[in-house]
Length: 182
Image (cartoon, rainbow, N blue to C red; front, side, top):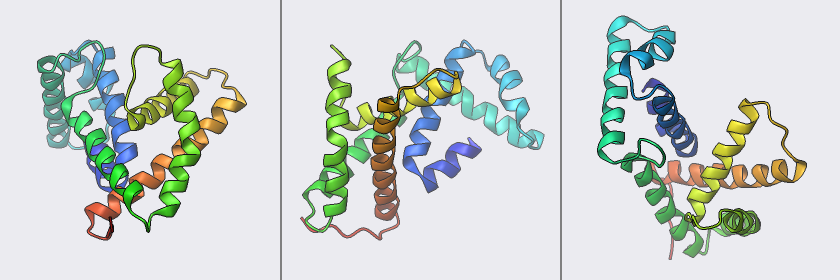
């Protein structure tokens, strides 16, 4: 909750990846709030009242995941809404003549997106969700100490760079600093 709040303000891409990790942590703890309290919440060096607030936040997320039917896989609407907002901004940026750098970054990333979508088989995710899924999978592989090919590392660098640019544009837009001509 504390980290999520901070990341949401500072970097929407990191926020989304963090929230996906939280969803997976909830699943790994079998939606058991006492297990989450033991394995996650008690690790925070926070006063008890803050820890209780964190527990309530996890309880709310558990309720959302159950209600929305994403107990085994998928993402809660809260996280889907972030992808929708980023997609809306992405499309506006691509239409804006003054955003040539953003457009160039997107078109440099597009071959990787196409390649990832081709590998996805039946499940065709929207472009930005494909990027986030790839980065999230890459981070999981790194955490597990798995070997990662140079081609994958190169692709992840480009996708990460593109998402970082989009996240910065999102922050500018939220702060009222982004003026797009269309």
